[in-house]
Image (cartoon, rainbow, N blue to C red; front, side, top):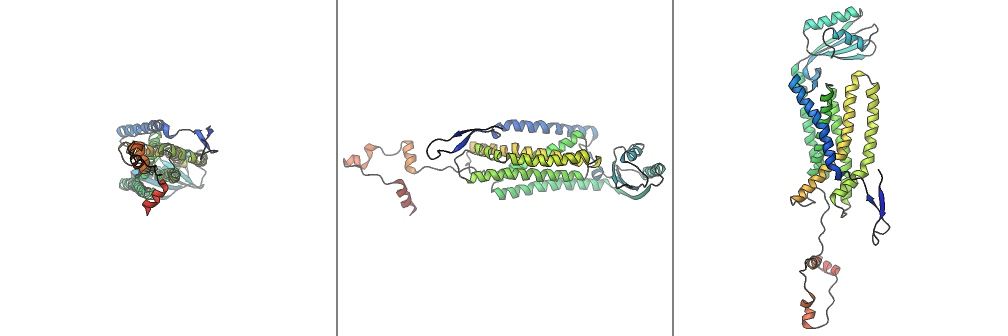
Length: 370
């Protein structure tokens, strides 16, 4: 990103080099909104389509729908593919199969009857003579539904607590609402990605959602803190250019942090095996969309809210942290409005005497303070 520079005007600002043109992220905010909608809408369509066709919007796993789990010990050589081939004979090719060490395998399936469970165990013993069942558990649908409700409630409570904390931290509810709208964007993107790919939603998906919330809010707070620091300088710079400059100052940091995390988790996705790929996929999507929304959504929402408040006549500094308007002295305002006394109406002109020198403005102000 190139940036042209120019020398400021002579006088008090002589010798100061100021950027003449920078990439206008905030000015192009309509494009960023459109891009976000282009990513979110296909996910919402997929949620609705799967709900109508399959009666569930997401591919809920055993942790949420209930089911059975088996833990087998097999001392003979075997692979996860061998176990999945065995489960395919019972129409359970979508079962979750995890190998632990060299001799143990953990299998999770949808709800099965006792005869089906016995059939799987007998088939495993016929395939591997050393197979032995170590544990058998059943998770009821009620427990899965309760876990799902608790997860939704936890995310909702987290959003409310973040609004309270950010409102106190920045002394403005606008920063908090803008951050939570960006966080809601990230949650919709991640859920839509799982709906489009039909990846299984299990208990590890909760970790993905918490990562979305934590990473997105962390990156947004960094940018908002830079905006607050620049507002504290009490410059006369308009709010929108100030926010754009603040975002550009934190841009490199945000990109470097996101790319470092994506590369590390991407390696886990490629080399970590089948059982961890769903989690790695969710983490990669959450980090990318979290960094995007912090830069291109949260700050833009803050600026749009500021402009909307100005159009409604709300003071710019009320809650938005915008620079306060500095009123000129009373006599300067009167002169600018043409309401000040003319030369012909002054006492000196009426009496014909010599015009008396007007007191210094700074001396007037000191007398008023006393």
